[in-house]
Image 1 (cartoon, rainbow, N blue to C red):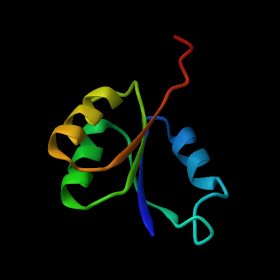
Image 2 (cartoon, rainbow, N blue to C red):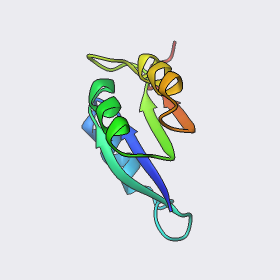
Image 3 (cartoon, helix red, strand yellow):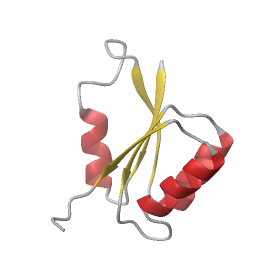
Image 4 (cartoon, helix red, strand yellow):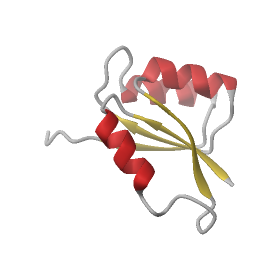
Length: 88
């Protein structure tokens, strides 16, 4: 089982990601938790191990780039995916 953390300040995006049919026994990826910003996600990553982070780039408090920088420096998660709904 691969543990997944979703990080996005918009609830609709977190909910949409959770509803995708790719999670579960068939793929081995399971969403364990979600966070509304990078600070909350970093606390969760320091408290528990995750195999995959799916994070938005723009968020309040700590954005996705800052989060991934901290995750990389502390070696908290091996795989990260950045998402954004901005065109630029």
